[in-house]
Amino acid sequence: MVAKIESLKNIPIFSSLSEKHLEELSDITLEKTYRKNQVIFDQGDPGNSLIVIKSGLVKISLVDSNNHEFIVKTFSVNDFFGEMSLLDGGSRSATATAVEDTHALIIFRNNFISLIQKTPSMALGMLTELSNRLRTTTENISNLTFFDAYGKVAQCLLSLADKLGKRDEDGVTIQLTLSRQELANMSGLSRETFARILKEFQVRGCLKVQGKKIIILNEKVMRREIVV
Ligand code: CMP
Image 1 (cartoon, rainbow, N blue to C red):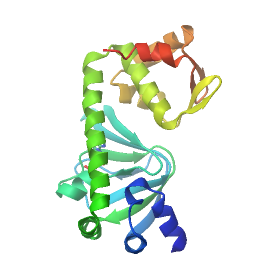
Image 2: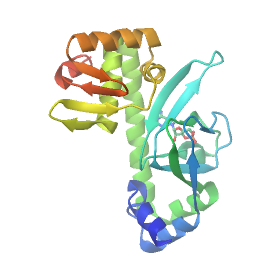
Image 3: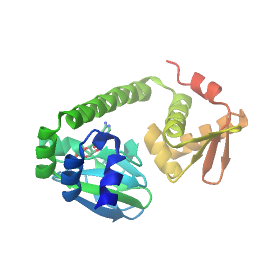
């Protein structure tokens, strides 16, 4: 119980909660592990829970009738998702899939709504996060509309570098669990186009690919690709 409360405290949306509310939250939280490639929920499913990631990586995607995937967003440690249907009572707006083994906390709707009503600081934290997500979505629409293929690849890699990258004297290393197809699906490009441009960036000395690692060597030049 104490360990669970301590771990809830480290999650930004819960960090403003009092000990009493953390205890309440701990009582209504289930832990679950999803295996790599396991679908957590499908677009259109009824949504009655919020999911917080303790470890792992989850992709949020839309899939058309021909099985083409567009990855809207990836979430990693301490991120939450599933809040949209939890708050508005609608169905899941997209599909969530574990990209790697993912350990998660699950909080069900009725319990969570009553906790939000009692804790304005947490409600404000969620509103702030939702505003950030709306801002990012607007940026993504702009990127997909205005960037050429170089800009789309650069944007995809730079945003992964910001979120998951490790900086050292060589540059920023992204240890990937996403496949090349998934990177292309995040960029709105075909796999072939994504691979061709990745190669061109390598030839230009902007980055290096080592197995599952991509090392961004010249962030400044890559950033030039995403100036509208
Ligand atoms: P929900 O609609 O319940 O299920 C899918 C989840 O994906 C959604 O809640 C959000 O948590 C997340 N999601 C959907 N669209 C976006 C977006 N544009 N930006 C960030 N997260 C999103």
